Length: 193
Image 1 (spheres, one colour):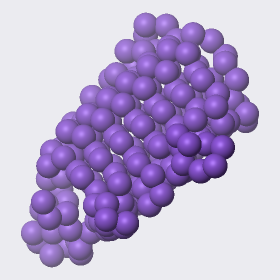
Image 2: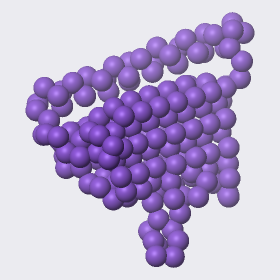
Image 3: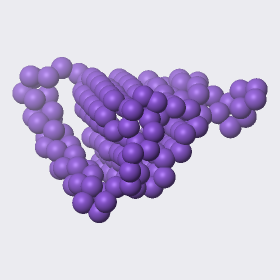
Image 4: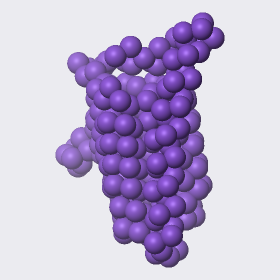
């Protein structure tokens, strides 16, 4: 599928695999061993660089504007390396830095937050805006962590979990609107790719 304005770069024999229903905004750069699932959205000016290991993104996930995603390879003393694994219906906020960690289904990464190698954000858990989840830390499902370094604050109630799910649904709908707007702009010569 042609994606004008998106830099898709194969490296080391690996080419990004992007589901045809995923929205990839102009200005994104996607490199190497990346897989992006059905209905996911990668917003303007994100970088997904899987040049040394893999990045896997499930279905219905959104990675918002300006976020950077990377991974680390296997090496002596660390034969498993640190792939980046993001589940289904995950929300990654603007300008997040997500590196070699695992975000389980419906996890949430706040604006400008950092998640480091081998950290785990549990299902329905929230890493607060600006927080830094250090290497190897594991957030339990439905927990809220905040701070630098991030520490557990409390469990999330049903209303908070429902709010995150509404956010995911909003981004799915908004991605469809932006896909149409980008196509129209490109069709009118207003955007370049």
